[in-house]
Length: 591
Image (cartoon, rainbow, N blue to C red; front, side, top):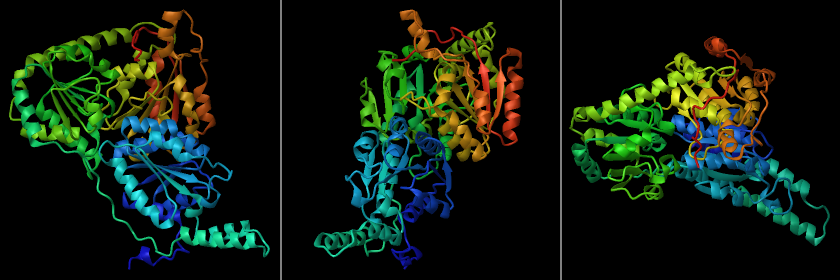
């Protein structure tokens, strides 16, 4: 008999069982906003050595769990209280679903005996959450907690990963003796037939919740990942040998762990594989930074390159709006798509070779089987590199233009110069963050976080929180637009309380600039797009962080260096950078 099996149902409570499963899967952090429905989960996790990180908004808890999942290769876990605690997570859950992140959300719920009777915060949570997750379940017996969580973790990581939801009623989470006292206090007194029947019903219900069959320790469920066929590798190898102008696009999905291995190890192996293949490569999403500063990595004018290529490989990249729904692809190119999702293999295009498989694993196998030389592609690669260099020169010229306050292109160039090799960049915003994405180069694999295809604002603080915990030795930079900053600025309180020295840079132009660009041009009015140049640095100071104000272009580098110094001393920092308007991204709104 194991130690777990020797514990009586009176001693056990559901929070301990939840924590035991999470510890078995090497979950190191639980993100939460406290609530009476979920207190036992928090205490159980602390007892297992899992760090409980409490935040100021439930969406932040899910965003932080999402970041941890992307950076570590295991699931990210958040726990929220019932009712509004659960509904506050919906946007973050949908973002994780569309970004294919394996997140586990634990939701408290009203007591099983009060369901549907008008209890505090009692709503049909499953109806709210189910459309936005990969799988959802409601547990109604203590012995089912561990099996439900094991299933949830396996489903979150298998196939196309995504968020899952486990609803845990409050009377399953607290110790049986405590729940028995609650039931007794609510039992009508007296000897009437209805009183006796009510007491009998509650006693039987309590025994049913804490079934006499002691919960047994569960084994981890397998993670199912679609595998490629060797014939797929051989077919593409033959096509590569014939290609004159091949092009590889690698997306976030290629960075998913291909089974039980850790994501960082997979990322390094994938990086080495791409070096061996020698293909000119564009990177997007979590794949940004995968090649470091290698010359095979192309960064500009992707649509033109796609029109010219004779072989296009989309590895974990769907043919959605980012590829103009397929219109960016050259009509005469041989199109190969590798994706875990059968739906994405058919989205907006008909590939010549559709491979339902893990993209990262397929690329590693392709590199292992490739015996050719990349030298035959040298003229093509040099052509693309020359065009990249021309675009970089244009960006440099744009950085030299005079604007009010600080030219945002120049500020991003300064950040690119001071960014250390061991760093993680988080993007949360529109115009300013998109400008930075052209200029600031992630230094290595798994060093860039953005919301993904959903285009969600407000993910930044949660992503930065998760990144700082998952990568404690890295310098974490959070790039905010002044519109997006307000969504999660209160989490500077979280950074301060938990001593997590994140560096935030707010590009403050007093505008929802990405929207204003098109709206003003088309309608001649900035209605609804104007903001104040708010003292965001003072707000951060009020929450316990350090605040810096940048208004003079000549002070850009010194302010960035000062932010690094303060963070190195252990303080979260917000640099409020007043930026001017440029036409750098004119006409770039995506629909």
